[in-house]
Image (tube, one colour):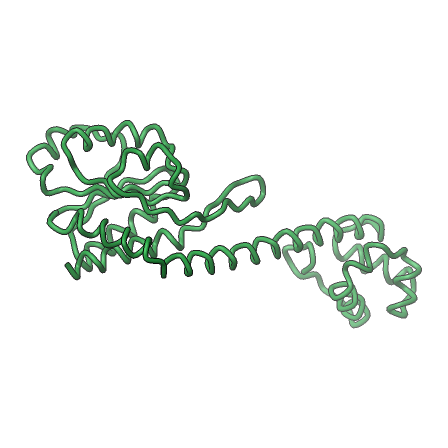
Length: 244
């Protein structure tokens, strides 16, 4: 409730105050206690009791916390708008001839392969798991390969001609992944990568890179990139591969 994670026990008067505050936050943060009391038609003492139920010593502290809460609401609303714009732009991109050609080319690269190896940077393991699940249930046997590629020669050397590699990365500049890919490049194993941007070292190493250009979202000092486009790209390549 407002800036509290839990809901305090409120009286009838408290609920009346709360409804006004919740719907007039921008105004309340600039009011003094007498102004608010007059608007909601209660005493200043009732306002103070209301504030204490929200774990504040008085109205001044309540306004400070309310203003911080308002800032979070504004930030989250901006994120929501940006996310909608991102998905809309990506949806438009998927209709382009370029995107369709990239999906078709990726499918052609692995259409004769018997095994797809999914490799992902840290944080995208769940997306790689989904890729394994989706490919295995639509077109090809797929497995997730953790890094480093220990016993590479023993595990894969006898079947490299039957393998295709699918790499998932946000910025495409994970040096550990790029170093490991050199083994596949030397053996001419096709590499498909999905990244946030085509301008990366991973793109240079891949046979084809499909980028979704999803912006970074900053939340609580952390950076996240929506993976909805990545899931869609994986599904489209798997479907196209099965159709071949």
